[in-house]
Structure formats: C-alpha cells, structure tokens
Image 1 (cartoon, rainbow, N blue to C red):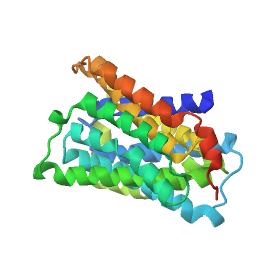
Image 2 (image 1 turned 120 degrees about the vertical axis):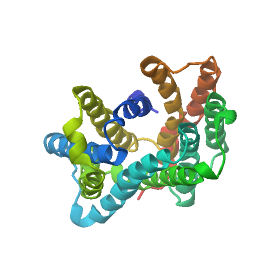
Image 3 (image 1 turned 180 degrees about the vertical axis):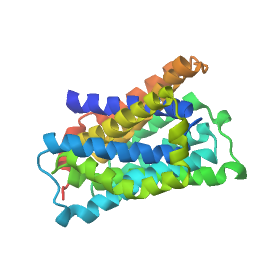
Image 4 (image 1 turned 45 degrees about the horizontal axis):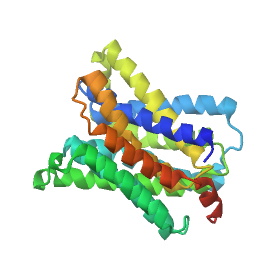
Length: 299
C-alpha cells in the first residue's frame, strides 16, 4: 500500500472517530434524522460545486445511473438512517462492538461475489484487530437483552449495508473520478433524506440552533461526510474493499481519545494493548494489499 492511500484511510477513521463526539454534542439541538438531512444535502451542494471544477472522467448517468442510485441507497440513506435509529434503541457500547463486524462482513461479501480471493492471513489480521477492539470495550460493558435487540439488529443491518456499499463501489470507483461519483450519490440520497429531516422537525430545529451547533454541524459535513466518502472512494481505486473496511478497527481508538479530551470521559490503560492489537492486525491485512487488489478480477 502506498503512503497516500494509507494516509487517506487513517484520515477517514480519524474523522469518523470524532463523529460520535460531535454528534453527542449537537444531538441536544437536532434530531438525528434532521441532522442527517442537513449533512447529506449540504454535502451534496459542496460536492457538486467542487467536482464541477476538479473532476475528470465523469459518470455517464445514462449508463451508470442505476448503479449510482444503488450505492446512494446502501452507502448513504440506509447506512446513516439505520445507524442513528438503531443507536437510539441500544447502547453506544453495543453499537461500537457491532460495527466491528464490518471488515469481516465486507470480506465475506467480496469473496462470495468473486471480487476478492480467500486468504487466511487477511482473516487472521481482521480477527486480531477485532480482538483489540473487544478488549478495549470489554464484554462486561455490553448489554445483552431484549431491550436492546431491535437496536442491535438495526445497527447490524447498517453494517451489512455499508459492507455491501464498499464492495459494490470498487468497480465504479476504479474508473471514474471519486468526487464525481460521491457527488451524485449524495444528490440522489438527498431526495430521501431531506423529506425525512423535515418530517422530524428540521425547520424548527434550525431556528433554535446556536453558533456552536453550526460549527459542529460544519465539521460533521466537511469532515466525516465529504472528506470520508471522497477519501474512501479514492482508496478503493488502489486497494481491495476489505482493506478499506479493516481500517474501521482504528476508529474506536480515536473515539476514546476524543471523548477523553472533549467530553471528560475516562481513558484507561487498556487503550495501549488494544491499540497494539488493532494496529498489528490492520498492518497484516494492509501489507502488500496493492498486490492483492491487482490479482482480483475487475469488472
């Protein structure tokens, strides 16, 4: 893996890792689905303007429009709505633990669809990184029971949708400009997200939002939305879908540090051995991932 791709993937998880902290602060004003509407629609405008000046190799919507719509459905609409609704019905610890299924699910889907080849080294790396996250969270913190069952199921379906999105994105991301690809995904997703946001009181919430709220919203739009989706699409041009997914294991580490810094949440010594397991596991998967990507049949 080249340094630019590595930097892009680490940046994605840094930005995503800070998202729960920013979201926790801004959810006092905005309903999650109202925030989702703002996030997707403004990101769509930004992406459309930027890609107009910078994007080459544009999408032919007459040929690829249905595929882009499918990516918008799984990668933006279902991914974002299922997660926030599921999070309301389960604990944050449960949600973080379930999200760690994404790399393994992505790998399984990619192998099943013939997009990647089976390799015990990659699976071992994923499981090692997963062990690091489980150790950091602690199974004793997980709340199993019928009260959280619906939320847990929704978060897992969200994980499946995002895994499918990563696998389905790779062929198109490999041949068109990522800015152009992501811009059209968000334009199409806005057609669903904006009505949802209006239904959940978006206009009233906008009127009472403070300047701090808008700074946080601005970060959520520019960082964990525009930045992460474009960087992920860029990385998919060079490495496999499962390699992009495995970097998700880094996310809880950044979340723990950010929560300690901004929310005064306790930071324990368990972060160090957990980080070691995560980084070693991710390194095993990412090692020579370019070679693995080139060996996979492309569409």
